[in-house]
Length: 113
Length: 115
Image 1 (cartoon, each protein chain N blue to C red):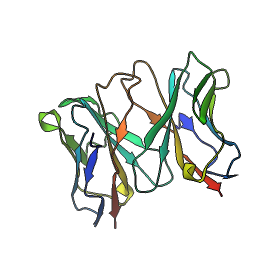
Image 2: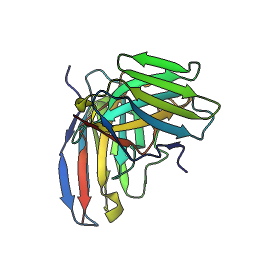
Image 3: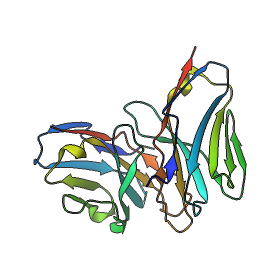
């Protein structure tokens, strides 16, 4: 039972344009969501997060939007840069789960110069 | 600040053999996690330690996998005997305290291939 899903395995975007990565979840108990970025041969690194009490969180070129009624979140990268090319994982957790994260399957983003 | 260290980086073994992975978390981090990432999937938590105690090991296949964190610092994850489906990247992560909302810092992982 996949509680966190990223339905697009890959996405290709032109440099300077917007990248939109999507994530859906099924567990209504999830109340904190994170995005991690992973380069080849490296471990995932934390990118941005959002609490369920918010619907938007912004950090520089990265913005995460949360739609609780649809159980959907998205990561927007504007403008996209070639260095953003990586695999992006969505993750979720609940308040009483300690720090246990449930990850989606990832989306490979390719930003073309 | 040094990151999470893992070794070896790559390991190839035959099925039914044993293998062990080592992790050194960020200094001072109380909580340590082991994840399994199968190709094309996201990381799946195997076990979580708080200091040297187990917080969650509900997804650890205990018939063949074992993990320990002696003295609350380094940790080893062992597979004995290995199966073909254990081929994956094994990621270690650590966080400062282990409470909710804490950032987890990941090591580079150990890529295991079981033939």
